[in-house]
Length: 466
Image 1 (cartoon, helix red, strand yellow):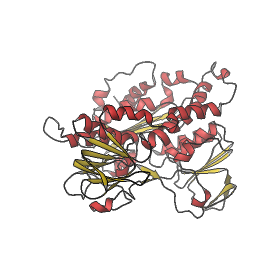
Image 2 (spheres, rainbow, N blue to C red):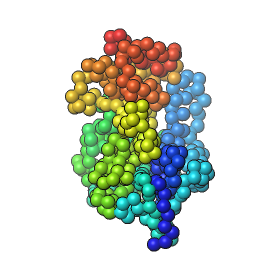
Image 3 (cartoon, one colour):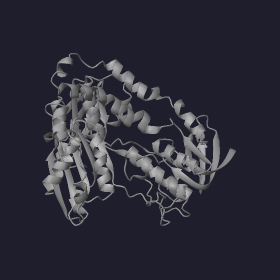
Image 4 (cartoon, rainbow, N blue to C red):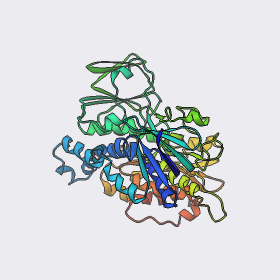
């Protein structure tokens, strides 16, 4: 071994979660190092959230304009795909992370380029691209923030068919004429619509569950299905893909015997933790699994409380904003911050989430089914999102559903879902209501501005009976 180095905190993974926990620790006065084998900024910045939303944006703008008489008549051409892809490249800084170096230097966080791997208690070995190994030791904590990668199911012939994953689709250099999407969750639904609106002639989505977005409210999946079909996308649910093969084009075979031919097949059926070669076995954990953590984000089953896992690699909530939240919280725990009663912070926040299709699906907290499964006596109240003046002003045909799940015993909202075009910015008010456990009697006095879509909150209160 060479180049031995010692720090207070070592962070493995420089995606959004890793960057946030490293910054929090450095701001707390701890000598901090961060290890990254690819790009600083991670999956979200270069292969996930940012490029995918950049690909969705042109189609969203055109669809919004077409809902407004007067503006609709100005939409006379088609999307300039080359410029749309160039904007995607701009938003990802052309997959160049040099812009992040200044921030690391300003925070006095030392960067190690290479693959980080645990090598026993408080020890990380970093192997550079040239094969040089550097051993780092931590006085206080090691934080794992290695994220996840795309899961490829063991379907005969699928892996041999050179399928696209989230990285392939968000980094595409051209729009295929025919695209087969395996998986009707957020990634699959978003990219199906993005590529159809960017010019793909045939797009087919295959989802094994009986509806799209199976983890959200049933009406959400139904409305997204209708939105995709309105764009000319074929949606097949309740049927599995059982085989695939490529001979130039890709042919996917469904369990009912149907065959779908496409130029590319995108696999978007889930994620696997990037922990297989992380050295978890050297500290008594199982490689390749999500790292279980407690509410302070400490890895369970590791003596001494020195190992933490934040973001997707712990499996709690595979969303960038939740990983950043966990990172801030873990950083506060590591530097010793407590509340007024001397208690450390705890990661108990409800999960807000958005699927950026058209219509968008925006949700926080529990669905009705989840709340009932948890034994909560709930009442569900809904109202058509498009039936408020703010929605009418967005254009003709704006529709969707707004729903709250109310804990009747406490008269507080434990879950909320909003669907409709461009509804994402409506979600944070619901998140505040759920996190703050604000009673409906108090929310009734939160007067929404007119004419905004947020007036739907007033209608929900009225539908409840207030």
